[in-house]
Length: 195
Image 1 (spheres, rainbow, N blue to C red):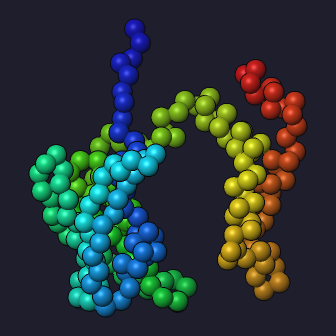
Image 2 (tube, rainbow, N blue to C red):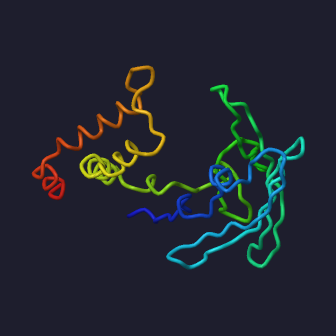
Image 3 (cartoon, helix red, strand yellow):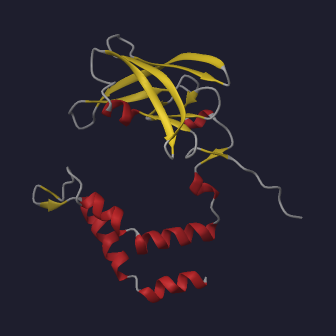
């Protein structure tokens, strides 16, 4: 008898708040209070929007979220933590999950609140739902056809190919992936379709 299918909630499809985006939009500058709106859209149609405010003036900085979930008003604060960078330059911001107490750089909205991914049970990333055979196929196709992303990384604005006269590890890794993808022949790609 076949197993009953489960359809887990996918982290890739739920609403997310990224710290990198908040920093890019100017919400994490020191000693400021800033408010605004985050909007999520798909194919030009607005899916959701929430009001946010960050306060970095206080001793305990926070991100305040204000929105409606199923016509119920929701308002709460997510603490922000600022830790000195291990490189000795600047600081790194983290959310402090109100449910788990863990530091994180992304918050996911699976239920009513935006929380750390470990606060939810039964959720997965999309790649975790693929069969073993599909994972192998995707990995192989990525090797064969993923050059475009590799070249984008290689020629991005601040990418360093060398440091102190030696090639960087990241540069060497990307060059190795490019070399592997160029070794794929058309015949090998056709054989993948026959598997």
